[in-house]
Image (spheres, rainbow, N blue to C red):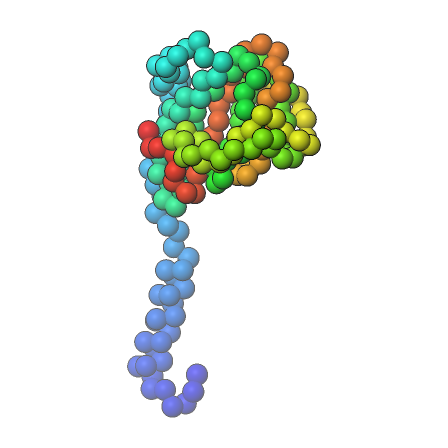
Length: 177
């Protein structure tokens, strides 16, 4: 430090630097944990409308995690004849619970049409199929990461499949539940 700074001012500056360093290293306060129990998951799924539908995507819980929403949904598919999709801003992680099938990710959506905001999956695109992309077999225990903007669809199922979908939504467009 310069000789022209008085001792009290030097002490004040050192204290200010120490405080700034201390605050910079202080972690942000943790948000309270949210636990969704197995009975809550099962009750939510049983409460889904139209239990005979080929696709049920039942959001179980969506929380505000500060700068984004986090959600978990139970999905059941009995048919692979669903649309190809991509979500503008929502990342998804699938955890396969039962059944298996063929999942295509990447490439481009054929016959793409803009989808309005859905309180389950947010805004994005849908179409009849995917041109190109990667084809993978999925089965129970597999984890699939699908980043925002990535086209995806099941093209073949070995019967009914069930999986959990974890959604990360920085745009906060999916509904809180």
